[in-house]
Figure 1: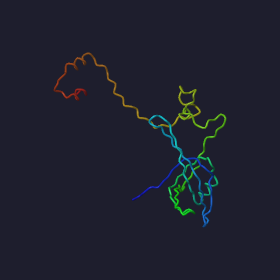
Figure 2: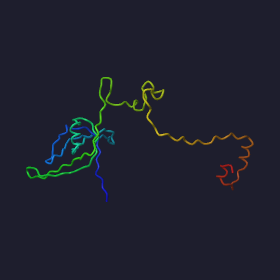
Figure 3: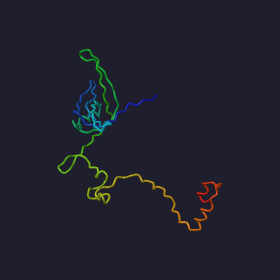
Length: 186
């Protein structure tokens, strides 16, 4: 039977990566990442919590993480969970679960200048400027791509009946007729 052990997180580094060498010369870098979760309770109260993840990268990826990552930076991490154990100096067995990093992508936060905000306002996301809200998409931004929608089927237009057709329709009320055929005009 097949099983899956895969982790994908996006979060901020809690400390600068620390690199060391194993006795056989293999590079290993460890660092921590914090992820946040937000939710709303039934009573409309907003809650949030943070989780802290220990990460370990090996070989060339360890060197890259040590060279390019810094505390506070936003990163995408993909890997798998690994639990290791050891005996402490006091003779107590200790366990640690870590994310073994297989892929890392540095992400950039939006810079915060005097004229720039650190988030994208909703109207910019939709491709509209405040001034052009009534006029449609702005000339400087493209409207988001959407899948084409199928046009709703319209009922065929009916021609108005003449007075003779109306009277014929009213006169042909046979209870033995099939109502479907009657509706279809058969």
